[in-house]
Image: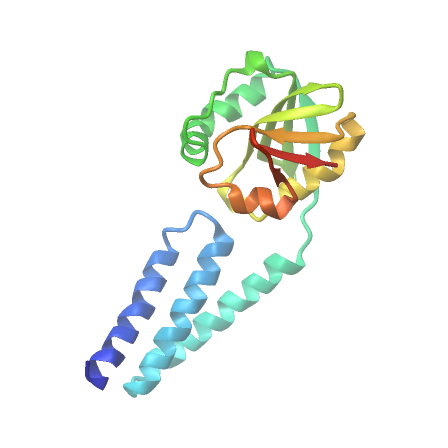
Length: 201
């Protein structure tokens, strides 16, 4: 494979990553992938002496880094709201996010008759998460632990874990689908068991 072809493929890689970044539902992931793609494309532009393209991508990298720093350094203030299964707002949120919930948790059973704990998590006055579980003797089995795409950065999970002891919960278990959530569960400290996952809090 000759040098010119390798350089061309390098440029295509940068373009591909920039395009893929716009498919991300998470703003944080969008910025990260876009930054990587812009760096690669900037290097490619310098190699082929396309300096206007290099300058444009340089500033794109700076803009992305600025927003990433802002996202990382700004603390999110959450509020935990306990509701009941007949709460109209809860049911509205579940219906509104139904397709995304099904995509995040393939095969999930949203039968609320099996649950007795229902929480809505707000950030700056807007709903960003829903947690539903079945609690008995301080152990809550998670039926749903959902957050909207823009808030899938582990912060809601960490917030919930910090607040649940005030709700009389000492242990969390999860036996639902983990196809997309192994990293999330590991990050929050859940331990794999024979039947699912468990976390002592």
